[in-house]
Length: 65
Image (cartoon, rainbow, N blue to C red; front, side, top):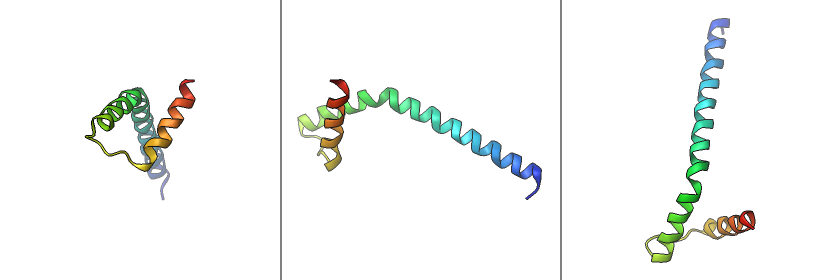
């Protein structure tokens, strides 16, 4: 692999990493809203909770206390 190709590949990886970091920050910002909406859907019986739901719920309780 030529030096220019390697540099291009590294730059591509860096750009993808920056995109992922941006998406992670967006998700972190929206996460409380998403969880609230999921709680409401489960309460109304519209959404069926999965096995991990209760684990996430306990984790949230631990973080907010």
